Image 1 (spheres, rainbow, N blue to C red):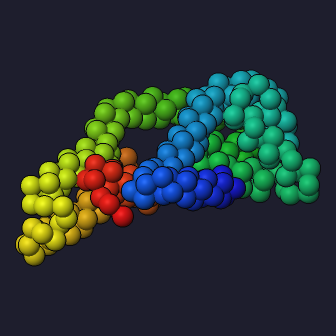
Image 2: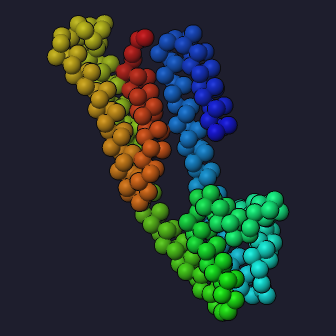
Image 3: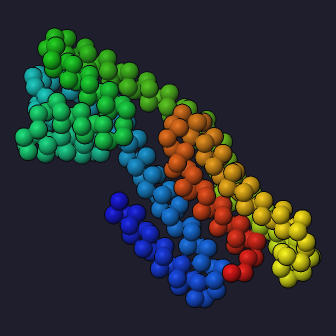
Length: 255
């Protein structure tokens, strides 16, 4: 939340400075929030990927240890595994504050955003509770998680090109083409859109609706393509200001 607060303040400041130079330039500031959203989400995504890539190794090594309690697990995994160890250090801090280990592990795993870490934590808790076949259970979990990671890696590679081409087309290429077309039409029909008559004005007004609809539909499509419908709001937050800003800049609007 702090990062978003700073981004909003910077966006308003940049918009004010650009507006003083030329009003239409203020639209450039609309690119800052989606740029920050892309950065923060990308950083979060890669952190989760690094954390999940450490899971199989961590579990395989954990399976060889004479672990007896959840505190032992937290203590062992809290070092040597990069971002994964950071999550277990958070668990350790909660345990030290008086929260039961099982509750601390489940809470941190849920907040981490990693489904694989949640699954691993549940399996570890089950293994500690049962007491028997600890090594086989943890080793089997490591193998399953490694297989899931490989499947996800292949899936991401296959969808990456299609996803980014779709996003860039909806956010930049299509609005830019419409904006350039609008600028050419204005030059041919006069200094302003009203000189072209009510029909031309209606068409130009419809372009805004088209860009907004395209951004929303693209956000929904890409989120469904990833299998994560909730990310539609994230993509919409990026595409709407990006596409509208691109259209304003390329269309030569005068405010």
